[in-house]
Length: 535
Image 1 (cartoon, rainbow, N blue to C red):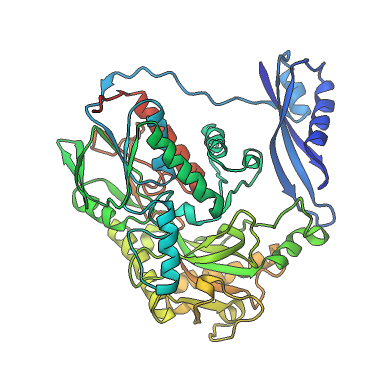
Image 2 (cartoon, rainbow, N blue to C red):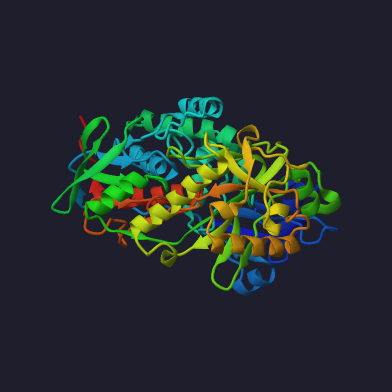
């Protein structure tokens, strides 16, 4: 059986799968007869809105059947290619795992690593400092009314990691074939099937919570175990071997240790550094959340086609470069809200979140500026301190009680502050913001780059720099500020059984790439160890 991919099929906004399949058949018939067992499926569909007078879909169709191989030169000229399906390697483990695999962190990296190990009978134990899904939601709702922060379990920590309270965006820039396997797992666990072919798949925080809960239950049903409210304080390392971890609930031994701690585990990073683990600083980004009316973004992106039921709400991805650093939009949330994402007391951190329907009044996105090691002294502690200092300054600028500092774009560009909210109303904690300038809490090189980028982005999307658009700070968790160095075997330097994975280790960014990193690490473990005997 051969699978061919027929690319660049133009469809009207009213076109459906049948139209795409018919176009694919016509193109294939130019190369030869179709086999009787040919099966067609929509592989990818994206929006082409480069010309506002002709907004349409561009699709790719995969077809599998008993094809005779077409000459490669004919394939290229017909926009057709062979599709290589992902397949797992065969395993020939040569070592015996002395004890249970221990996974620290129940974000996408940790959970998908645990799932694959559980499927193979390794009975992993997952330790998560935060709470399960339902409790996480209750904690956040309580915070909104009481302003009592629960540092161990809010938006950054708990089942599903920080991505649970997000747009549930599953877009990734990695080309790993395992991505299709990850997306299929999401569908099997309750995500809508269209994520398999959407060019920019998302599930929304409301659906993602159910998917994460189902994933956790599946791990447990396969023999794994998840312990919540279990904070890892230190790693017990002896003679280059991770023997276990000391936690808030006592000591847990392990046969191997997987660290999937996310990008906000500053306390663990500090401890690892002082204990002699190889941790290094890395570039990251900081900035603000910008909010527009979603209806105005739709019109700017889609013109007269805005509101067409097949399109949904518009989203964007923009980038610009100064002489020294880049500025880009990140984690754009159509019809979403700006959320309070602090994980430490008396700090303000913002992030974005959307439900699946994306039916909120505002669009929001991070505008982030590149931060390089030389900006903070090229040290691990410098990276952590730099980020924490901005979050503390933002808290003070907001006046306390986790009120966020906010400004209009007009004030920001003019270098003034205090202009009242206009037609764009802040969504952060129901509008609990204080109108002050970002110059109070961001370095001048960051605010200067942001001001320049707003002009560049306005030239790309009319109205992006609208004077009544809002900028809320501070966005600091776009990626981890440090990296736990690992080798080509995915092992931490100097530790023969410690696997740092995901965004917190500095090797992924976002839900899907983190999940794929966890899955690939599980395969590395399966290829090395025989399953342990677990009582």
